[in-house]
Amino acid sequence: MKICCIGAGYVGGPTMAMIALKAPDIEVRVVDMNAARIAAWNSDTLPIYEPGLDEVVRQVRGRNLHFSTDVHGAIKAADIIFVAVNTPTKTYGVGAGRAADLRFIESVARTIAEQATSPKIIVEKSTIPVKTAETIKDILSANAHGLQFEVLSNPEFLAEGTAIADLQVPDRVLIGGERTPGGEQAIKTLAEVYARWVPRDRIITTNLWSSELSKLVANAFLAQRISSINSISALCEATGADVDEVANAIGRDARIGPKFLKASVGFGGSCFQKDILNLVYLCDHFGLPEVAAYWEGVVKMNDWQKRRFATKIVRSLFNSVADKKIAVLGFAFKKDTNDTRESAAISVCRDLLGEQARVSVYDPKVPVDEIRRDVLGTERMEPRLAVVSTVLEAVTGAHAVAIVTEWDEFKNLDFAAIYSVMQKPAFVFDGRNILNLDKLRSLGFRAYGIGK
Image (tube, rainbow, N blue to C red; front, side, top):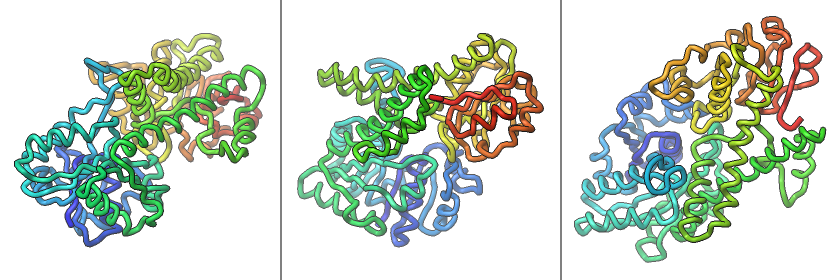
């Protein structure tokens, strides 16, 4: 069997590496038009950071895992084609700000139809709105030259930072297909690939539309829990309650459970906000404005939580941060990844710069150019934004330290030494609740957490 994956990003790269590792008899080829990205996959410095990924790639690259820009050749040779291209939120036209931009999905479908010379199984791996498979099938059937294509939905449920562990021992593998003989056979073929290492009872099969919708709903429910506890964090601060104690108490209820009840500066990442906005758009499209408004509230709460954190910094520093240095520790949207998409740090940095602060950013994995581009865009230069290579450089002369990403190294910093090089009074704002505030206060800091 030969598998091709179009798209060498956060989904395609790790997923195909794991398939290659667990199924050494299958030839796996990851293709992308971005030559620099493919070169990075073929180098000693992978384009994405994910714990354990480097070791997996090194085991199989050059054996049965290959990275290439030869999209056409890979399509011709493949039996199964995974589509893992980007599906960002539209920034223009109908549905701008909410609907998914499917231009890359459509482009891939047309390329497959043009290049394929034998029947294929097409697997949607990108996060896409319900009924996207219909679009893919329409394009394929109109250009297939008599070839038979089966379209499956196989959404990814990886959490960045734990993607390799998630791939090795997934909660479930979801495969959706048409309830036709061809569709059932395609489902069986893909299921047999995953069954090399995933127990059969964890491989769930559904119809196409249930599978497509399940991905959006799963992310919406997870994001909803984060926004829910973040809304309570504001109430905790107003009443003297401790949000961690509240979360622990309600998480002990077996009907609720403890996961995704960690209050923070706000959620980020490539999926949560995009998928909820997509869900909102779908609800409006199908005439369900009340449902749309309900889910839109999850995103609004998350945006408010980011603004509230920046506002807390300004108000605590005597209602002005103009010309004051603020050290922002962490820029990735979560620890153990270099992904910055929708990171809370972007919003926090922009708000502080808008207040005329001098912002000094340190992150152990995110490149300097990416931080500057995310905060400022491609055209602007801003002398008040510094991106530094050490924590010490970030905090020296700072009036405040803001923890925005929960990197493990921030839990064990020498805060006594940090206090000695900061302006006084020295402030710490823990946006991830990973620090001991009482210990910080004993050192002399004015320390604040989320919901504390």
